[in-house]
Picture 1 (cartoon, rainbow, N blue to C red):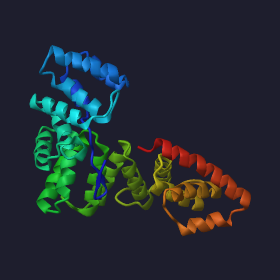
Picture 2 (cartoon, rainbow, N blue to C red):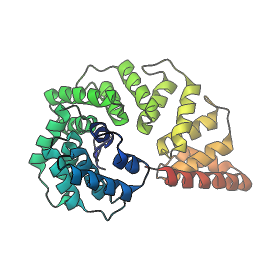
Picture 3 (spheres, rainbow, N blue to C red):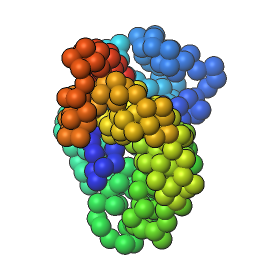
Length: 305
């Protein structure tokens, strides 16, 4: 996935929507959800053979080709299946086709048509389309587009898109597309945190710790930093190390401080003050901290998205 101004562009067809439009029981989609991809393809193709207008099944086949699930990845084939489903009115396919037409690998790159398709999917209420359209609008740096971007992000946020909640929190802090408000920013960051968005979780923890836009709560902040740190976020690991160092919101623990510092440093986040703390430890303490950090670094690599 690509990033723009710190935000993630969401790809994929979000096939949950396709399942709602398909006949019940949806054996093909159930197989997809449970990782039985060859069965999913076989069932979807069986449905298409029985009904040449089964757009949801076509979208599913396109998704399998796009991701290379149970079959060799084939972006051209994925694009063709999305095209067929889009022609039959599947809004998930419309969004997926837009993302394919922005990708060189599809062999049919067409940014102008992709933009039109994205607009169409967003107008139909597709959450990821609204999020992606918002990011594109923000890139223009025009006030009118900023306001429209906020409206799109709110649609995505209502559908529990954590990245949209995080983006709204950032815009509220900046006063882009809406009045600047630390309180509004804190509410969006809290929602992003609850939705499992790690950057939002870290931002909300910082706001809690400083009492910015929300009542100060160092213990709650420490708990959020700890959760995000275990998910491999280097900023959270660094902040948690400092909390352990000074006993803020959490019991002081020099070894824990050093271990989390080493984990963050392994991801490129430098902190001279914490380097000094590590250097002051006895050799056996340094070795213990390094062993603990080693396990956390491996965990972060295994759990990173």
